[in-house]
Image (cartoon, rainbow, N blue to C red; front, side):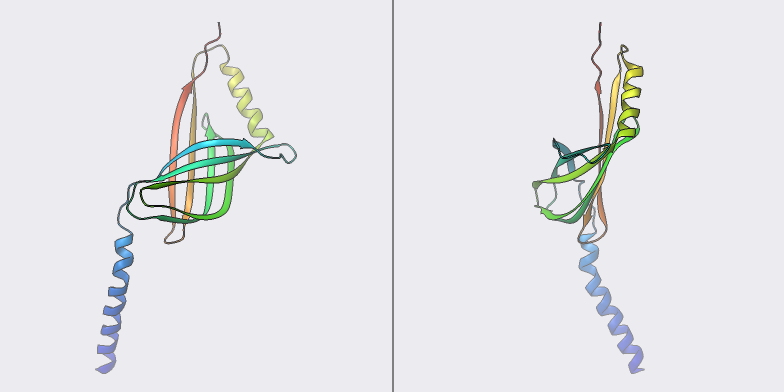
Length: 157
């Protein structure tokens, strides 16, 4: 009987301790992530290396701590560049931070993009892009982000 009461008491205590964790899992507004700048960094072999600076805005009332970033850039529906960084930091509540992520585009990916653009040369159209990534949260899991859009190709005459 004593063991059963002790087990029930421990279960209640564990549930009470877990409640603050459940509150922190409530829905938050998504982070706003945009490319703030792109810088060239030294290449290695047949690769194009760039440092992508991401501006991350946090519209929530709690800071977002992170320990690691992953990024994928897609152009015309095809992967153009990918990168990861083990950087750690925090995006303040109702604030913003700039996070540097080195990315690599292989020569084959670049050639594929150039050929696709050459096929469109002379025809008006749009170039679509997409950025997918995640901030590895120091708390629970990862926070994913995505941005996409397009821009018009200049019409040559």
